[in-house]
Image (cartoon, rainbow, N blue to C red; front, side, top):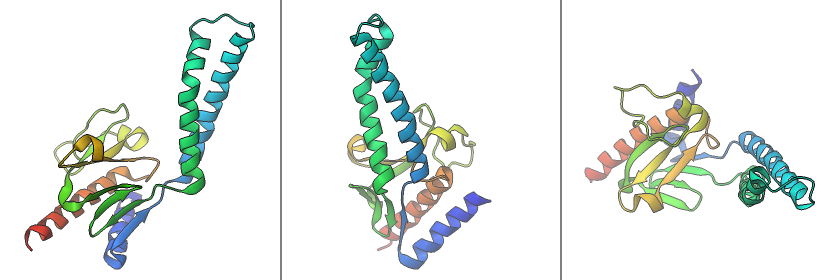
Length: 185
């Protein structure tokens, strides 16, 4: 029920204002910030314990020393999204943008669903195969451009919107409408 109302709400807002702005879900990013912060504190405490001679430098303290900068980056990135509410997903008549990344409608090749483990799934608009439930919990979808697909692709995860499959299906339908209207001109 909520999935249908979200797609109808986006379609209504797009018809009314000509654009849809979807900010990130701050509660999700705040929880991620806390989780990454706790992991970072654990890694730093383990590395400090080994540095002070309280335990030997086996695999876990070494993993803590190597993994701490990566976790620090995750904490900073998720805290930035939580505090400032950016990047905002913007869908308008010209195309789709997320932060600084922008794709015009005629540049979009496909919208691919990605599962929780980063495995490519079917496109959300394909009615022959059901959607894996892990996409809602852990995954997202990628808006794939025609040229330079690795550099210019836009990834929309569950930190951006709760109804991932509904948004992917709505964007695919909107892409088809926009490309049909672009060819008719």
